[in-house]
Image (cartoon, rainbow, N blue to C red; front, side):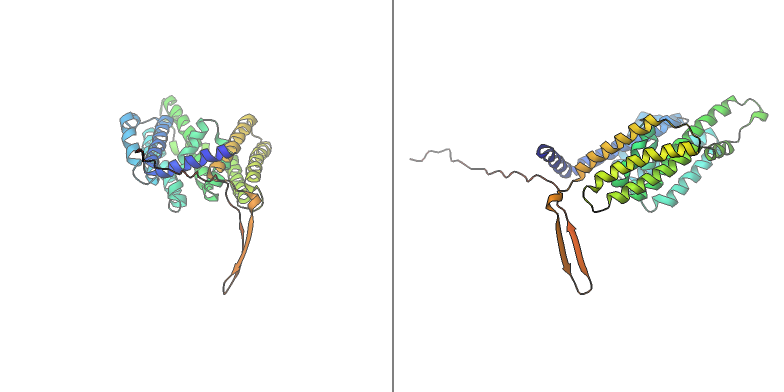
Length: 312
């Protein structure tokens, strides 16, 4: 444990010292992943998939606030869907405006989560999201996660619409884009189930994580993972859906493991040294429970200067 704590503390000290370099690099990589993924999933406007353009946009995002990454990705999304049909582009504009009004105005820095959810779907670890994000961001992350699930299903509908429009040969076969998309999204019971389960898991995990009993964070992750599996199974039976249990189990386990690792990096506490404090002012009594975080004291180096000249 001491070795792990030493590595963690050294890593945190390194990141703190070189934050001015590491933060732009992280923002560049994040923007590059989001832009590349968005263009590959939709891929209707070829010019947006230009590698040099992606690098330039990512380099700009590396030096500006992270919320602009979500804004640029939203513009790309609108252009890609508008290429399919004008009404699909207008639907995307409405989708972006609703997300901005419902979330981005209040929590701009975490808006990129909406574009990360489809990437997790592509990596087959979507079910890890609610457990990890619950303690990293909190209950406010429910909104971008739900919008992210919606965006993934929206992408599927757009892909199907492209195929249907390509197969249409005459006026009788003409397809109204917005009607096709809306009907497809409304009839998607699996998406609705995912909305409910992810919201419940995030809120339950965060609520337990914030409690003050011993090892509440471990209990929060385990209970959140358990509820993630149980709610999906219960919902699939109730709504008569075919849900694959293996990806849910694997994603949940991955989410618990990642959450534990990130909690260790964030800091774990030494419950054996719990201290209870009491003080007061003119209006209130205060009762405080103080628990120190586990850490390794830095080694002090004593440097001795030895005179190379021999004194007789």
